[in-house]
Image 1 (cartoon, protein in one colour):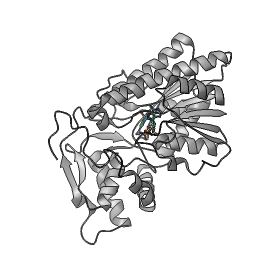
Image 2 (tube, rainbow, N blue to C red; image 1 turned 135 degrees about the horizontal axis):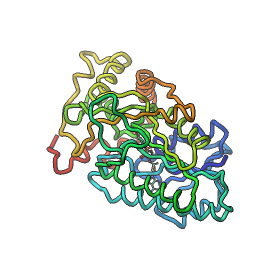
Image 3 (cartoon, helix red, strand yellow; image 1 turned 180 degrees about the vertical axis):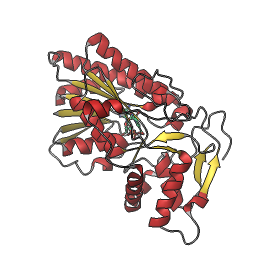
Length: 354
Ligand SMILES: NC(=O)c1ccc[n+]([C@@H]2O[C@H](COP(=O)([O-])OP(=O)(O)OC[C@H]3O[C@@H](n4cnc5c(N)ncnc54)[C@H](O)[C@@H]3O)[C@@H](O)[C@H]2O)c1
């Protein structure tokens, strides 16, 4: 199958590109190369005859039409997005333009191409989204997000992703475009951009800097190793039912404080400090405004209908991730100079200097 993957130079998109090529799919990676992109993430497949790159912006409809015509893909996996909640608080405009208008452009370019091809039933538009569209859960461990949970986004990021999900469903209902949607929990693993929680903790720990924890660290996230997500996405593309959405999660709920302590324990073992523990560097900072208390995914549908299960426990995944950052200093050092990285972003009105 030839797959047009948007956002393939980002964290999750690059894992999907690598996994798709490994499965023998041809891939066209369409990416605008924003601050969050890094082509080194796909260096391992860049010379493959199965791989092509298109430097383009999903806000540019003419470029999208040209790329569909030039490559004639069998399917689209749409991951390109602005993805950092803190940046969405400081600058929501980019999130509206890329995540909503950009998705609209992708849908229209895909629809026009699909109609031009005679509406093949085998075509797929797979939209990759987040569990953040469902809002925030109470602490009750029995309560999790299912595919039927009503949307209740609370940050500019999650609102823009929710809007894009609605557009994708509407393009299926109204125009018959064969779509599949997935909503996934927090990912972590190799090539995670050094502004997100796990890389920030590992890199600040190594640099002897404070390990910032928002609020009291009680916010709960459901962590999934990125390569397990990429596998789930390819299964959903290949076998998912048209018009259906699938929740993807790791069944690995941790409070932020538990997660940071687990990372410190791994680092204490692998790169011990001369004295004390990395946990001594933990510092509580002003919370993010509107910080959702808990996310947790019920992944029964994708498990039972499509036979996907995560292959990596959170303990294994965190250890692999720490090993990867210890072994790939050149990669992360090059990204630490990018705009906003290492700064406290997204404090909004509720923030106070930290
Ligand atoms: N990171 C997570 O934990 C998580 C969880 C669930 C879902 N998602 C979703 O998965 C997708 C990928 O997330 P990620 O963490 O890999 O993001 P990322 O920020 O690491 O990568 C985004 C990629 O999209 C590209 N991009 C941004 N704007 C673009 C535009 N206008 N035109 C073309 N390319 C553009 C960037 O250059 C970058 O390569 C997003 O849609 C996100 O909402 C992420």
